[in-house]
Amino acid sequence: MADSPAPLRIGTRGSPLALAQAYETRKLLQEKYPELKEEGALEICVMKTQGDMVLDKSLMELGGKGLFTKELDVALLADEVDICVHSMKDVPTWLPDGTTLPCNLEREQTNDAFIYKDETVTSLKGLPDNSVIGTASLRRQAQLMALNPTLKCVNFRGNVQTRLRKLDDGVVDATLLAIAGLKRMSMQDCATSVLEWNEMLPAVAQGAIGIQCRSDDERALAYLDYLNHQPTKTCVDCERSFLAALDGNCKTPIAGQARIVDGELLFSGLIAMPDGSQKFTVERSGKVEDAVSIGKEAGEFLKAEAGDDFFKMMVEMSPQQVIGQITK
Image (cartoon, rainbow, N blue to C red; front, side, top):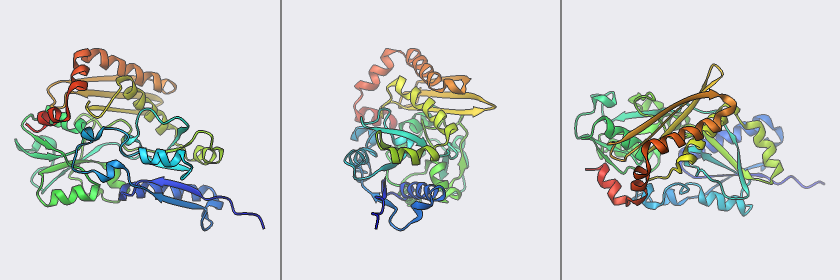
């Protein structure tokens, strides 16, 4: 009797959103490949990352990007899992040697959702002066404070359910979350409103799911080739090229979004000071096949526009200085 093939092991974080994304990946694989419907053919391997375990500090204080992926990277390279499912906005610009990210699932709506504590405020512009906003994102904080410098933004971490519970408990007046995550958990009705890009430009790769594997794993690469949604990957590659050109980290508020409209790629990007006092924007368009170079050029343009002093200040700021600016 022939041995059964080794199971395809899917690595994921354990938050409700991460599990929803892993289950969606499993469903799509099983729909295409009947052999993966067999008992034991697919395994979901849940692991905790540093970002999941330390919730009383900002991401910047913990070291920024990679906090939600490092443990998954280690497991992938140690052959403990075969593929890893990520929220793309958590994935560092540079992947560990020996791994590749060949697949993006079809992207969900990328916008941010605004959620207020009650029904008295329905938009960002309607926020009363001195309102307290819970968010762990410097990108959101910078854009909020550019809109209204009296707003107080406080570190607000944990999974979606934890953040909404804090809002209900009166810890803050409002919060912002990606509408994509709410939709994936059928929680979109929690949103007070969905913000347009000109109100709150989303993060690079927001709303996209990425699937990583070992570079030499031909079986995983074959499975992921089918799952890849090329229009999504094209836009995400453009946005990540923009981020790479800026050498983005969690000290610098950066936003970037690409979309394909009538066969043309349109890109919008933004960098800002954490307190919203300075903001630089860029708009670019071009051929879809030039997505990576469009993102790179947009990033290089903003880097020159903001100037060396801007980025030097970002590098030299301590977390306490940045947080002090944000919560003044």
